[in-house]
Length: 172
Image (cartoon, rainbow, N blue to C red; front, side, top):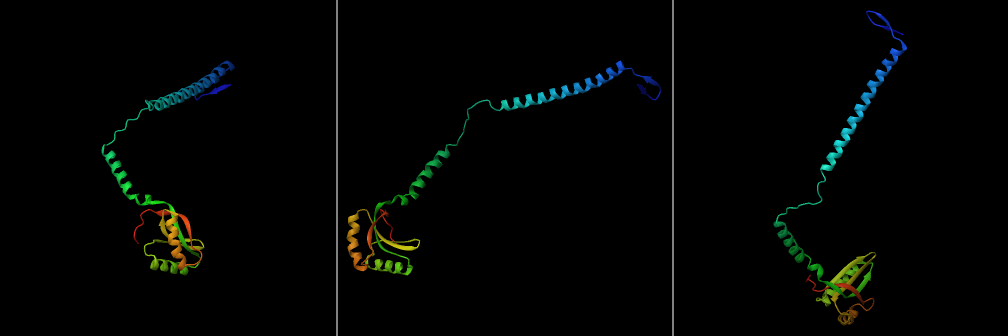
């Protein structure tokens, strides 16, 4: 093999060629080792960073004492606003009519108002029927007393039903 340089011609024998190839191999091996060491250093550095953030299991909270005052005030507000929802109990009502005709249900409601102004009426729509219920009775016996008087106005389809009633109903 001959080396072609600009100033002279030189012949390289096989022994010299082996040194030349092994020198190139050594340079690429050295570069690979450097890259592996560099990657190892980066991995070690990143793992040390992640360990530095977990120094303890305790959390300290500094809160303002006014937060406790706000919580107490909200409890008081909730107490006042939810009283109306706690004014119900299990009891009885008188179901006056159950019809799919809205006009008949409204006429029955008007007749009950005229004859029994002290009873509160509840007109509900449960598809496809309009149901008119009256009264807030805790005892069945109280409902049955009114039942006899209502049967005079509506001779059929009137009966006492269990329902959730208002303990102190508000005036309409």
